[in-house]
Image (cartoon, rainbow, N blue to C red; front, side, top):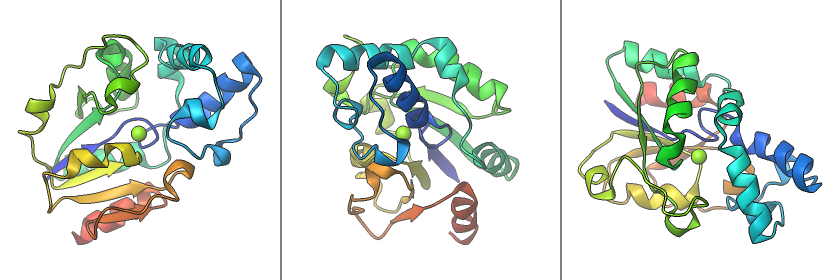
Length: 200
Ligand SMILES: [Mg+2]
């Protein structure tokens, strides 16, 4: 099978790291469970300027490398690869974050997972004129059997694959979102995702 896996808040605990940055930089004390919006500017109630600073800090290589693994992610991906499945990590991070993102995967024993940067969030991008190494038209030529994603804003990238099984990692910012179809399933952990993939 071909498997699409999102990076932030699927493989690693990005939003938790951002709550620390928001507190340290701007005194915004928003616990992870209160991060109700995928848009962190909204979740942390930041000005445009503060939001840009937050995102730039969160994308510094040292900071990207420090993100904790989401429990079970690495073991599950390696198991799938061992079974012969093709795992592609498709992140909405800009290409300027590619090297540290690749390094994070390598350091977490995920050397065999492919990595692509896709402009998932369009104009929301905080780095002006960001570049991405995967063009949308090339993304749409790719097909997947399974996807693991946390962001409701990224679901539109699955519309062209009606048979795709989408496992939505349960996060505070997607709990009120209605899942777009029967092929979507909310999962509380990587163990649960792994169990579901066994029965696909
Ligand atoms: Mg994500």
